[in-house]
Length: 100
Image (cartoon, rainbow, N blue to C red; front, top):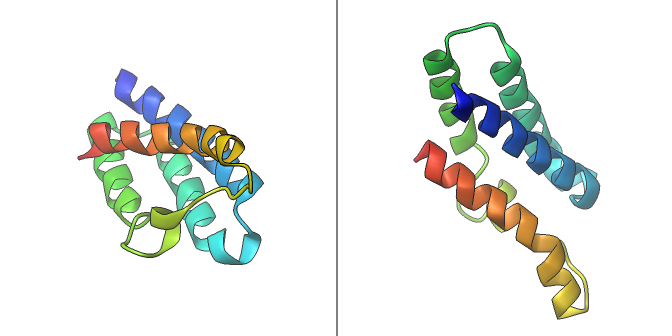
């Protein structure tokens, strides 16, 4: 299933961004969820089962006003901030399309 491969790539990219720009104290839990999602996607299991598990875990990442729902890379320069945050926004948009 090519969606599984796309999910794997998107979650890897998301984890890299959160590791690089998210402070360690606030984002430890989401990092662990992302690692767990990647582990699920790498497992030797049926794609439908993987998809269902990933969808459950994904919902834990975006509670209102917590976790990754308010993730933002801050820079004083608006254009730089916009440029740095766009990849994360693109990833979350695509994940939403796949996992809704």
